Amino acid sequence: MTTQTLIAILIGYAFGCIQTAYILSKTVGKTDIREHGTGNAGASNVTAIMGWGFGILTGLVDVLKGMFAVLVVKWLYPENPDLAYLAGIMAIIGHIFPFYMKFKGGKGVAALVGMMIGVNWKLGLFFALLVIVPALLTDYIVMGSFTTFIALPIVTYVKGYPLLFTAIGVGLTILCFYLHRANIQRIMAKEELKISEVVKGE
Image 1 (tube, rainbow, N blue to C red):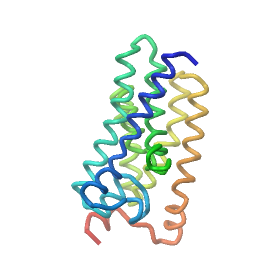
Image 2: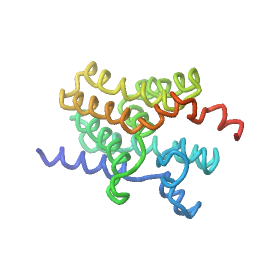
Image 3: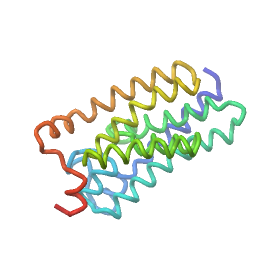
Image 4: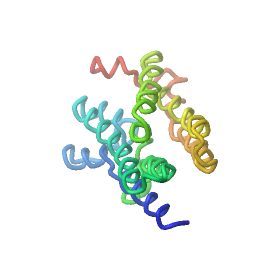
């Protein structure tokens, strides 16, 4: 492993470890967001527990950290776009596995969208739509999570990044479904919180 690769990994992971949901719940709500709702340290759970304002703020910062992880490394090593992409992947991993939270963080969807914005704004828009459209069509935000992570290894392969990145993307997709296993069970039991219910404040 080269020094540049190590630096890209560390920068990406460090950005990912900025756990917005956890920080907001601890500083504002005086509690751990993982002890409420779905138990997830992410924007959707913050919205359900703390309201839309904090939910939007959480989602925005989580997107920005994925984006800045890519942009910082792109600025450091403009001649090697693979390193910037790697930093984005590590931001997702850092979000899911933050070291100071005993490696129990969020699920990485917003960080993934932010990563793609940093790589290319058109690609970022595409991934944002992959979250929004399926979520609105099904009334379940989790469906947008599935479509974005399914797209990750496909886009990585098509764009010609190293096959190792594609393999990591496949691993993250599998991990996405594993982390959302409780959501899948609730959807099957018709107990999953719907977007329309959150909007109505039910």
